Image (cartoon, rainbow, N blue to C red; front, side, top):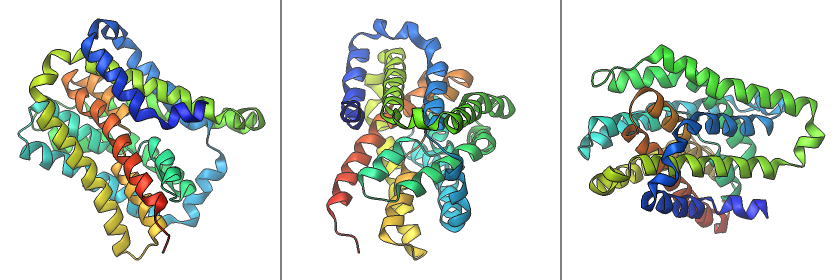
Amino acid sequence: MLKKITTLFPIWAIVFSIIAYLQPSIVVDFKSWIIPLLILIMFCMGITLKVDDFKRVLKKPKIIALTVSLQFLIMPLAAFVISKLFSLSDELLVGMVLVGAVSGGTASNVIAYLAKADVALSITMTIVSTLLSILITPYLTLLYVGQTVPVPAFSMLLSILKIVFVPVVVGIILNHFFHKYIEKRHDLFAFLSIVSIVFIIGIIIGLNQSKIATIALPLMLAIMFHNFAGLLSGYYISKLFGYSKKECKTVAIEVGMQNSGLAVVLSMKYFTALSALPGAIFSIWHNISGSIIAGYWSKEDEH
């Protein structure tokens, strides 16, 4: 039952976003919940990880290094260029760059499974980019938008440590000591993550309700192009390096799907509610596009 609810994430996100848009008063008072909810998501990620997951880095270091490089080189650059092409406001530019500068999202692991990609490799890539994002995300943001708005890079670094690193590590430690008990409840942790991100999206939609109508189309197109840039570059650049189709699919999904929840939290904490909107919409869109591409890939014969 919980697994079915989890796989229908894009539908729940769209439905709750519509409710939040029509009745923003339902969600706006929960603004202070955004950070605790993301901490819960990162904890749920950590508690499903084992120490063995980190050992896989040593087995496939080249493809992981390639993926992480694409993640942090292409995604923030694409976000910046696309935002300029669509003449997005400075606030939306900041939000787009933050989406591009964060790590891969945990949803990529689910999409990798549905697409018959390499799930173990996907999990390893997400772990590595998540840990590297603690240092890289603040300074990428500073690089791309530091000339436009003040970027408190070091404060952001400390926030990511608290919001990402600490809950993930606590989760890993608990899993190490209570693995038999936790293993049976993986679906529950996935469900809690989905409920949390859907609620975060709803809050951001509610907070921006009055502005959405005027910016929805260009922002939506920018987000779609940004997501496609990650998916296409991830697939074809890894193909250029001679990796198998299964590995190319894994890289594409990992590069194209971002930890947009973290982008939302950083936007809210250090910038504006409007800056958080790209992250909220990206959360919905990358799961829709990911589900579509997973459906296509899962039916293809492996070559």
